[in-house]
Length: 518
Ligand code: B12
Ligand code: SF4
Image (tube, rainbow, N blue to C red; front, side):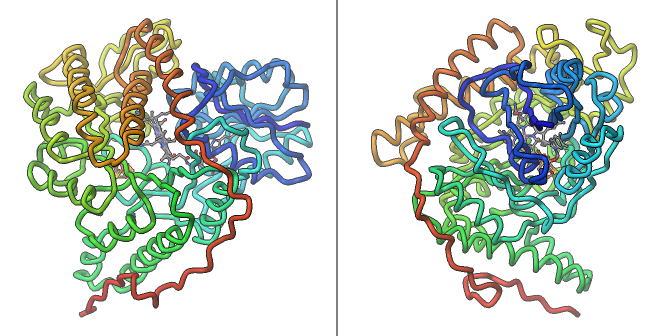
């Protein structure tokens, strides 16, 4: 019984930006008695069906965007006599759909870490169950990834998760519903061990693949204090201290290492946290700006963000702390008007952010927005017999981009205006100006290349609709990706030792927020 773990994709680039972490985690969760799984990442190359034999187990991980390709692979594997098991966020949200379309013997919902060995044992005895509930595994039970299985020179960045779950509840996001609002942090030692292993193998660029790298804000602590909720305050303080402990350990790693993460804007109000990020070489972060107006933020339940000049100040605070921001903006909020586009582009330029993405509001399953859209949709049109509210099941070549309907602008107008903002932000002259913080010409050229690569790759998942344009864009992205990979390559450091255990709470550099419990 051979185990195959497949990451489906309609487009294969030969080289990829970020490692699909789930494959390496499930490989680690595979007991030795079942052998070493074969990892197939279709963003590199398509699955070779001939490698699947009767009795094998084929594990397929899907998110909404690649679900249909995953279903195709599931049917192929089942027809070849394999046991087919699905997991991932989309399978968690739609286990019945997976059975209906994907040829699944079994579906795992939630985290796969602990339940995977049971699934394999059941397949081994020829008796897989239709549904396994993986649940939300506690931080200390997450498996560290098996990086020894990484193919050489294929990925630019490796991904290491440090915390799962997000306390917020943004209306367009499913993370807080599937991963929960309670932050589940991994033990610092295990995170550092993984990173050291990756640096030994030659990775110096690491994505901290967290839902929210800043799960406890100063405002959360103050609120617990106001409520005189001692238990909550102690818990939040513990989480915060562990964040600082992690960053102090990262600080001791070789100084050519670079980390990138996702974070809420509130970190800008926490100078100690930003300073620790800088020391830890967390050089970049995706910050969900979403909207530049207070009404827009209210519409997506993100009132904790700032708008207007307050927003500019917060974004600049990241930059001043040496953390480059990839600002993520959403267009198509009910409160947006034609003026919102230019206002957003102006703000993005003034705020000194290094990269930006401008996405159109899309109803993603599992979100509040999706639920409302599905409920409000009357006379839903069908394409190839599939209702639009199940758009991910429409074959790729006919699948329209689905956007949340807007009270004032048509999807076409929204798309045109959004495209205009992308073009403006990534105009060569502006990209070159933004690169001026870099000293050497080589570094500046690298910045331009990465900006253009990002722009091209995004055209595939983001805003373009016609397939000719997507194909052209894919070609350019492939070419740029090959070039960019060389920039990220670095020499392995096989002799690198794990940094010594960091002093914890007593370390003076860890700002413990002291409050009076009245
Ligand atoms: C890091 C990350 C990225 C990175 C790296 C992606 C990569 N190559 O790995 C980047 C920035 C590139 C990215 C891009 C995008 N992402 Co993203 N990303 C994440 C994030 C924060 C963490 C993913 C991760 O590595 N987790 C760690 C691993 C270990 O966890 P896991 O994947 O969930 O796997 C566990 C279980 O799900 C399960 N499991 C998974 N697969 C399988 C398979 C089997 C057989 C079994 C048994 C179990 C199992 O077991 C695993 C271990 O417990 C998630 C949020 C999240 N909480 O999932 C969003 C998330 C997956 N991304 C999301 C989205 C929307 C995107 C984009 C489409 C954004 C965009 N508009 O461009 C693109 C799509 C890119 C693409 N084509 O794949 C959504 C997906 C929503 C959905 N319904 O599909 C999520 C959930 C975030 C959100 N806000 O809702 N992403
Ligand atoms: S968008 Fe970000 S802050 Fe909002 S719930 Fe999702 S992960 Fe949390």
